[in-house]
Image 1 (spheres, rainbow, N blue to C red):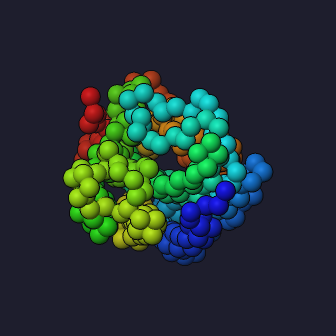
Image 2 (tube, rainbow, N blue to C red):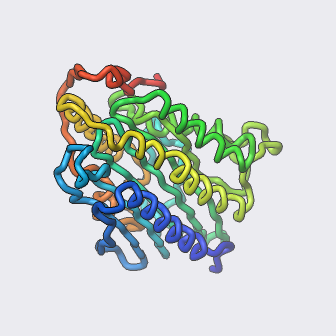
Image 3 (tube, rainbow, N blue to C red):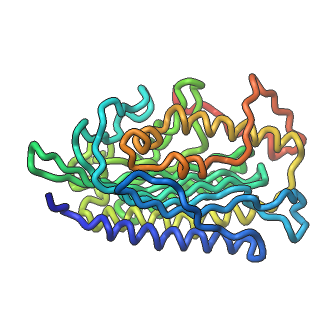
Length: 338
């Protein structure tokens, strides 16, 4: 069955975006460690292009020329074709019930880009950004369908209010270029999606989340019904997907990383950062539908997924954080959803 869209076009856009992001991150420390292309095992029909920045040294002195502000970063682009939906891929109750899951037995192709940056300094936030395009084929109906999805989320260990303002304003400005009604429902969806029902807390300070973005009516996104101004055609959705991610990195996150990534820290702040990373991993493994979707449909690689997790983390029962820094008193963890 012929696809109504060219998924290879999306894949090529993702590859170009991958190189642009790598270039921006390497520019933070021109003489530092570079990204390397790594080979990861993939199922038949899946192409993974994975670049990893790690083993950047143990220097924690921000004034030392050897200091590298990123502890680990991964940029993964995937093209998967001929995947088939198994039964049992279900959202976590109360978190992502609106995420589009094709029915069991339906065949689909997917193009995906995922970026994760784990800074060394606790003053610099983790950034998780991904975009995906899925084309599904229903043999019983002799039809095909397509949609876009994605998420941009910032997870600080120590919150700087001005960074939070810049982050949300940057996303709002970029998203609103594609329709004045685009931003607010995607922001609300992000707050809900990154909520961990097991701990009753939200991971990070939010951003945007969207799924099933297409020409079809959308219960969550069409806040003004058919008059809602948002991306709808394939071309508009593709441009929205690529442009918002591109501008978010070049205009917002890299600036935050440049400002905070070279800030020195105390042992208590590092300890707090490692605990927050543990919470980050908890959400990824327990709540992220994309993680289970990739494994169960064999459209993703477990090795590639592991590469975007932090290299160091810890799990402490009922940790008490007594910061030495006034800035650190702005602990970010708060429950926005009850």
